[in-house]
Image 1 (tube, rainbow, N blue to C red):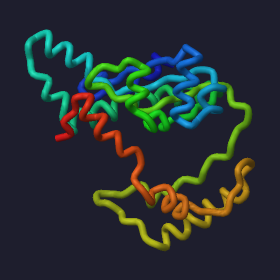
Image 2: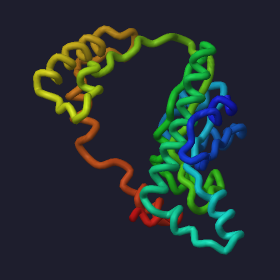
Image 3: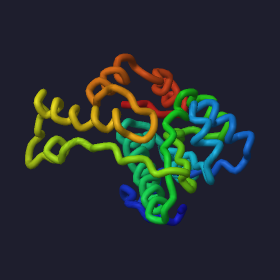
Amino acid sequence: MIKAAQSGASSNFLQAYSIIEIADNDLRRELAKISGSDDYVNQTGVFYIFVADWYRQAQILQTENKDVKALQNMEALTVAIVDTTIAAQNMAIAAESMGLGICYIGGIRNDIDKVADLLDLPELTVPLFGLTIGMPKTRNEVKPRLPRANILSVNAYNRVTVSDLQAYNEQTSDYYANRSHHQKSTDWTQEMSNFLTKPRREDVAKFLKKQGFTLN
């Protein structure tokens, strides 16, 4: 799995990420509590935390008495986030190709400071999300994705229309009503409206600055 993750593309071969396997059961339970994903985290085969990581490169620069400013801005953070996400998705695809199930755990950012403390993360690192991998008990239906015309544009951005959303709502409302588990009466725009009504995890920006990122 780790080899699959490392086989992903990396901007300028920077490899600006780290992967932490959670092998300690007490630590896993603590992370499950923070994430609010007890079943997914505690009852899975393996659990990894993916970390955007400029600490290694900072050590290189400091050893050579060079400024680490280039690692602290928003562009550097973006590069590290992209590198980390590519590595995680490579691992996820490899796992699924072997018949395993996966689940991303973004809830570790519910208390990002505590997670960083638990994992003893140094400066210029950010715990982005977890990834669980195991043998699935059941196979859930695949959620209907947005139509290709709403995702793929040619040469210029294609703006979504009300009729586009209404058509997609018909698909998603049918999915939610008839799926095998946790049926509910809703559709995609209603789900988005409910989820995005208020800002979430507003402490993340403060944490990033504490970790040494200027966000300029």
